[in-house]
Amino acid sequence: MILAIHNLLRWAVLLTGILAIVQAVRGLDGRTPFAKTRPILLAFTANLHLQLLIGLTLFVVSPTVKAYMADMAATMRDGSRRFFIAEHPTLMVAGVLLATIGGVIAKNAPDDAARHRRALIFTVLTVLLILAGIPWSRPLLPSF
Image 1 (tube, helix red, strand yellow):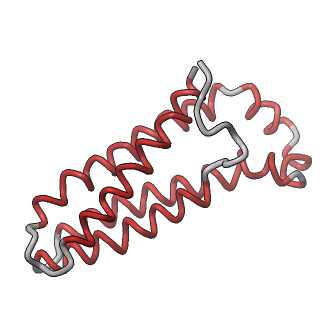
Image 2 (tube, one colour):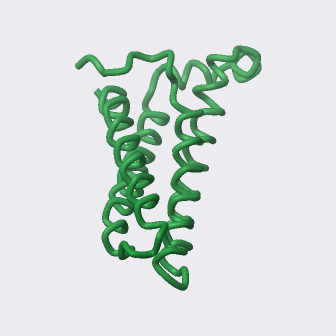
């Protein structure tokens, strides 16, 4: 069940990330107040944090992870195992950190155009990290 929720929440993360990018692009001219973009950025970051908590829970309770961790030498030689044990968590934690730091940096920019520009840069980089870390070999929608 935790894996299904984690799988489903990825779409909320991606959707809010794309919406945040669109909103930031709209604000690049400086005429759109950053206050209109900030709620979607906060939703994106909140979804990321929730996804991280669910992912960490899954990492702790998953029998697959336990089996992979039992033989780390074999796991690190196998690309698909290594992806779930090392690469996926690393990319996702990096994405959460980047989004969180980016939100603070954007909020503290001197004007709305700069806030949107910084939000755009950090959100695009975060979404790219997330896209690289998503296990696309898994079903696109969970089965409950």
